[in-house]
Amino acid sequence: MQGKHRVFKGGGWYHEAKYARSTSRFMMEPGMAINYVGFRVVLSETGNVN
View (cartoon, rainbow, N blue to C red):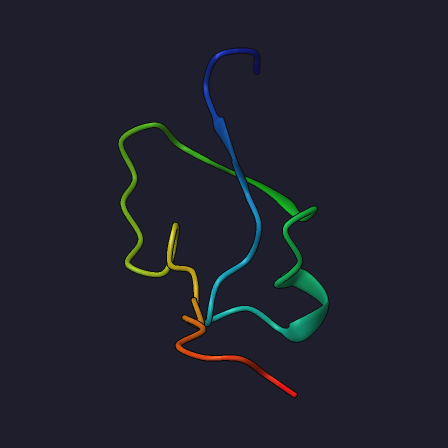
């Protein structure tokens, strides 16, 4: 099955918490598109946190 799939890293908002880690790995076909792959939640710090 070599070359038939690609690996993508980390889960997304759709996955259970245990799969949302950046160390998670999944495989999918190269031409497949999923709207939750590559989505990352980001928090921007606008001031000092005490």
